[in-house]
Length: 127
Image (cartoon, rainbow, N blue to C red; front, side, top):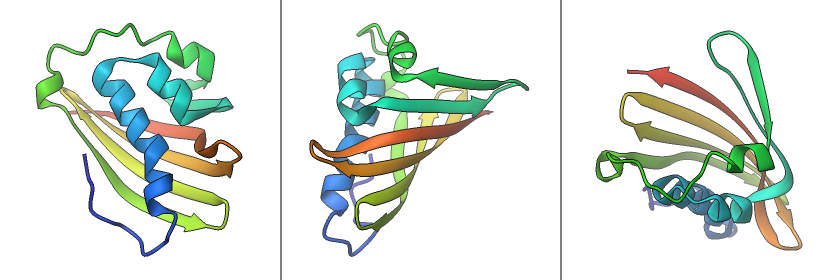
């Protein structure tokens, strides 16, 4: 996981928290980390092999069974880009998951509960 600062913004550490929870959720295959990272109203969207997929957070969380992938030790996740203005931010995260590399784009908002992921759009690239 990338820990170097990407901005000089005083909120960077706080913006990173939900992104790190998201990456931890993948590493541990844990839906609770995902629920803590995302706003309850979040949508997760992509175009995979043609059709649009648009998932609610509840649907997405059904994928996680608390069973990390067999190749978890070789997987990598990086925060590549952050842009923060006031109570809104965007981030780019790359997940190197075996035969597939995922590029995730996030919109984040600063809520009363802290920074949360409002929406995610992603692309899956087979290697």
